[in-house]
Length: 291
Image 1 (cartoon, rainbow, N blue to C red):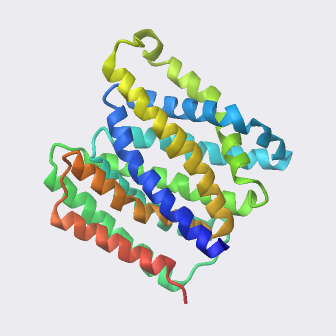
Image 2 (tube, rainbow, N blue to C red):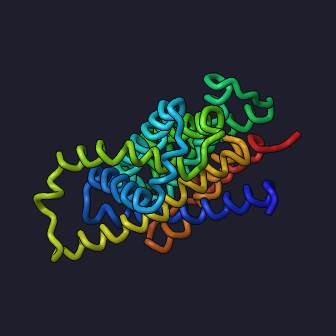
């Protein structure tokens, strides 16, 4: 496949994998707390990657480590906990739609902080997407009064982290292998994640006879290996062969998969919320529209 075919192939694969991640987080939270989910996800991913990809660490030069650290913190560590907390209070399908804010932030911070150029049409796309996001949040608060939509801002904060991650990978880690970037990220995260987990009661309450807990760990294992380790590597490769904005556009396809999983799990979306989602997708069209 040429680069053009590869980038669309990777985009579709990522949308399926990450679109399924939200329901996996929701199911995992039946047996663990949000903090435990975030920490265990990083630990499982690190163990999986280091078990076969540790030699790729040798490709990381001294000048890379600063940006490997930055991307680990803003692109994985902080968002991992923010998403876990958000899903405890908002339907997983809604969380996936709010995650569509990532390309907007990628464009804005790419221009302001990293010096990447953007077109006027992309700015219009950002404004349209903002309108769609506001409709989604306000309507969601009416349709689901038992859900706390203030948690939506956790997803927006996480999307800023993802935006910085994509721009840093493109600008500062462009000459580094995608697997090396991902493995380096989780090599750095395994110790702080274990430290965070040790402050919960996970080790004291761990019981192999606890069926709910074991099911949760099973969902976490799938989420960590497929939804984090493999998907993160594919994403870093996608950033290398395309652009930060195109790569982050995967967040516009993710809701299609996540909504289907959510509906199968009994979640409901109103017509107005669907309209909000369509408006966000229209914003994406302008953000990614070529001249």
